[in-house]
Length: 220
Image (cartoon, rainbow, N blue to C red; front, side):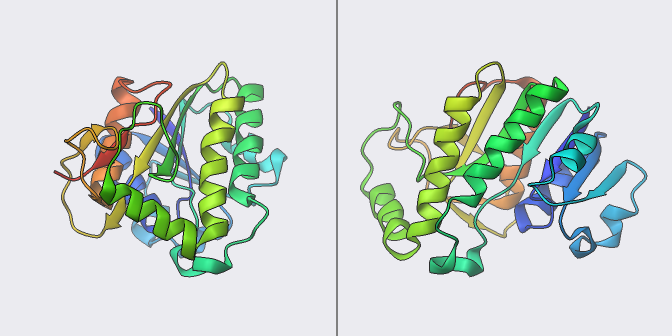
């Protein structure tokens, strides 16, 4: 498949690109600062790089031309913490992304989300209440932006085949196994390896098991 990756220069984005290439997909990277990526990615014969801002509809449309799916690892930068902009820039970016997808005829979207995005299938979990409450308290603007991402995709994603891959605490270990379900279901846990996120997304774009849903994914 020919895949457009957004949020490519972050830790999850790099893992996602590597996973896509290892499973013989070709990748278009749309990034503001593609020079941050390792040479092993940017020089790969199956990688095509388009430099641009998320707000540049013309360049984003060029990057999206002919792709089979959009895979997004966009999310608040960890280092921004409480200083994340208060005007929900990521949610606004998703509104533009979805608009361009519809104009380009691209229907499949898999987006990174977090446990801050609620789902009707979730059940009570003290661990996740504590986790989400901590984020809402100490990184309020980032929390609001992530919640707005979920609202934007659900409200404007009519006609798209979207999946929001909600993640708990991300780790750097190499565990690729993933549990997929919902908060409080007795199965999912509070941590996920970034390698597991990447493996889930590529498996999902190939098998389409969670279309129109927002599973919570975690390491076993």
